[in-house]
Image (tube, rainbow, N blue to C red):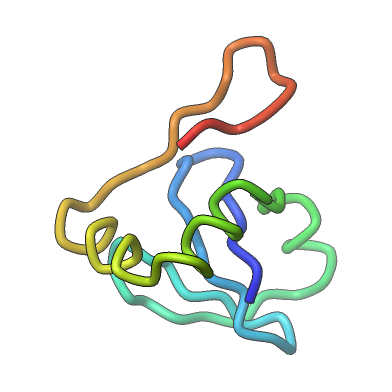
Length: 79
């Protein structure tokens, strides 16, 4: 399972497959076109690895309605 970040809102989403994404903080699920997905989301490898290894982090994000902090240098997202 891949975790992606919404470029505008900085909320994390779980990529379910077939262009279906779940907002981890709200639990809302939706389907978007390929074009919209490419414009809206960026894969976050650190969050993907961390949440896959420690699934309880997903519950923490939902409970606290957390967003991700983006490195101001633009080279990598930070948890």
